[in-house]
Image 1 (tube, rainbow, N blue to C red):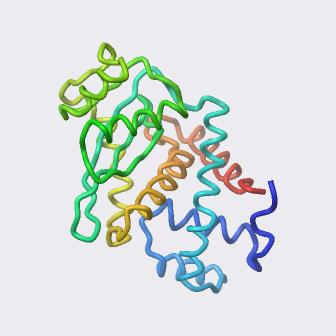
Image 2: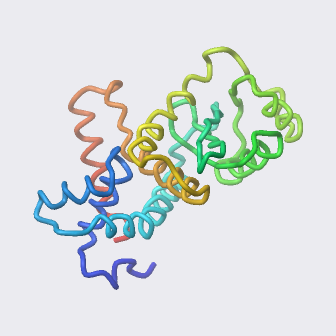
Length: 231
């Protein structure tokens, strides 16, 4: 892999820090600019925009590749759900697949919410992660129609409150969407949602399930691995 930072005057450490702050936390471009200025880093907010567009997908792809290679996800049970996203007054749908541990596997944006969209989303996820043993969804009829097509109707479960894992996985993205004052293009939505999901997975330590010492070790390990991305 060639050095992706070879034509940039700024150091890779500063670029990684700016991308992490903008993607991971619900901050605007100008807020990231002010926080970096407080640390002695003088850049424009448009530079932050350019960096996340250029390096965000690169970092996210490397994180996904490492997780797929090390099987850092589960095929025991997947949870599928969709949310409404308004783009220029039109309603679009953001589909999300997570495993039973809350690992975001795939996000996909469509203009419709029908069987064709569900099939395309499932084939996209299964091509990368394989076929799960069980899939939990809400009561949208398009899910059952798609399960009949791919032959997974027996492993399809639709029970009230059982899909809260997928419902809760939308919350970090919703907070981030509010800070960005919504999206203006479906391609930008797909790009940012995919990058945000991968980076959220990387830093999702689940501190409420671990003791303080283990959480600190996991956080330090995640940050050290982030600093080695695209090195």
